[in-house]
Image 1 (spheres, rainbow, N blue to C red):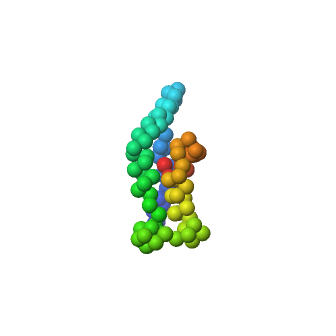
Image 2 (image 1 turned 45 degrees about the vertical axis):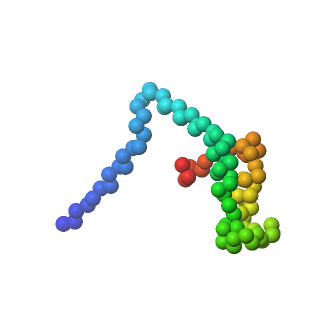
Image 3 (image 1 turned 90 degrees about the vertical axis):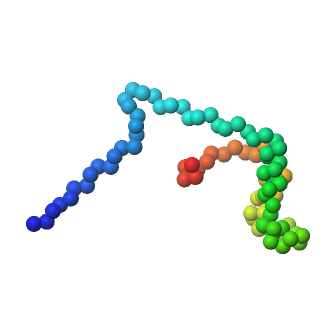
Length: 90
């Protein structure tokens, strides 16, 4: 005789109770002080500079990561666009 295993229903992950409204999301963290932002910008050194020492490649030879970091370093918070974090990265 074969034993049949029945699939158990998956437990529901919603701890909500009927009639109880969901709690609002927490407020966003405060902005970092300007000094920390400057230190962060300065710490984003291009990989080409780290690997080659004082030799700096022309702009067309820089990789996309270095171009992105250069754009971040030259921008300020008012110029940056706020975007939603994708669900996979949360």
